[in-house]
Length: 173
Image (cartoon, rainbow, N blue to C red; front, top):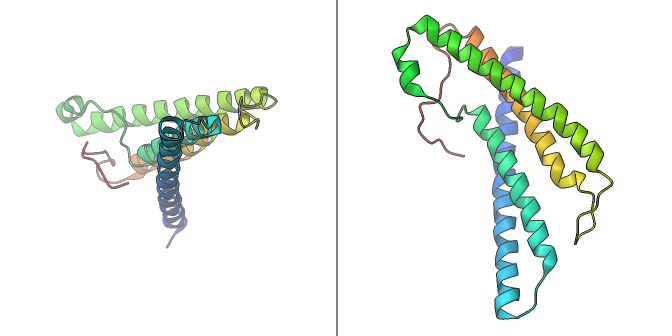
């Protein structure tokens, strides 16, 4: 197995780990919201920390799930244009889209790192931990999205056949 195969295998394991993390975030989020509803409406006591913590789990779940979508090329596509174009122009358009996505994630990564650095001294209202923790989800999203976008570009650019494009059908997460 060559270097490319080893990197792809590692990224497959990383994607699987992120998918498991998303499932954990979803389960935790669901439990926290259920606990909040139960204590607020049944026991008549409000637990403010559950609302705040569930919000942060939800944020992490969304951004982590998005990175899996980037890896699997599940972003919005206008397929009727792709199907209309000749093969050579499809590759050019896909390359342009891949480069645009790479630039987007580079911007997200650099700006989110700046913002997380600015906000690190702010504390969350109830739990009193650094607001850099929830905002670091955007840094993780930018980093992983950047890596996965580069991988997608490399697969498209160096593949001998047609580049890997999502069929638009849902895949297992």
